[in-house]
Each structure stands twice: as structure tokens, then as C-alpha cells.
Length: 104
Image 1 (cartoon, rainbow, N blue to C red):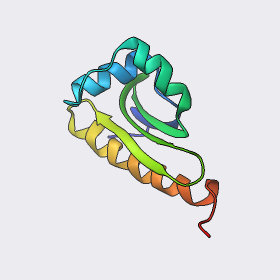
Image 2 (image 1 turned 120 degrees about the horizontal axis):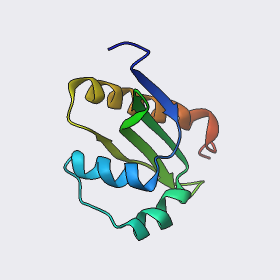
Image 3 (image 1 turned 135 degrees about the vertical axis):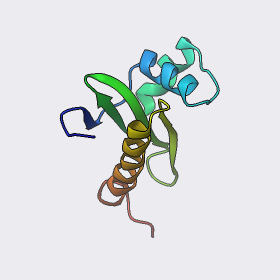
Image 4 (image 1 turned 120 degrees about the vertical axis):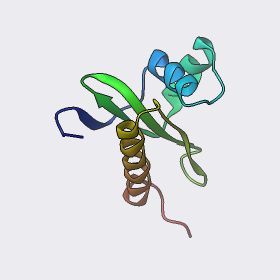
């Protein structure tokens, strides 16, 4: 894997990419309507691009104060994409510390 081929980007996946990756990863399919309603509510997301094509993703959702969940960790079934997906999870978890309220 080279940096030119795979790139981790802080971005919410498009509806089409989201739906395609869920199916490719063996997750339940979602409708275009559901994706259009849910994706804009993403708190934080990363995608992995391979030569411009989204091959992995991870999202954080929640209520903005008390609860945050890492969801939709999905990748096309290639070894490199799976490796990059692991990076997306770590990036998502790293993001949570400085950006979310401290517990009291």
C-alpha cells in the first residue's frame, strides 16, 4: 500500500458510497431515503479513498453531549482496504477526545 493509492479523508460518505460499502461489507442494506435522512446527522466521519474511489468508511453518531457511537465501519473486501478501515476507526476514536464535552 502506498500513500498515493490510499488516502484517509475526514468526510461523510455520499449516500451512494455509504449504501454500496454497507452491502460490500456484508452489512444490512439501507434505502436512499434513509441514507439521505441519516448521513447529514453524522458527528464525525472518515472515508478511505483508493485512486479516488471510496473503499472504506467509519462514522461517529450521537446526541452531541452524552452518547457517541462508532458505527458503519465498512470496507470493500480487500486486504489493503481492511487495513485502512482499521486506521479510520483509530482516527475516529482519536477525534473524540478534544471535540466532545468532558464528563462531569
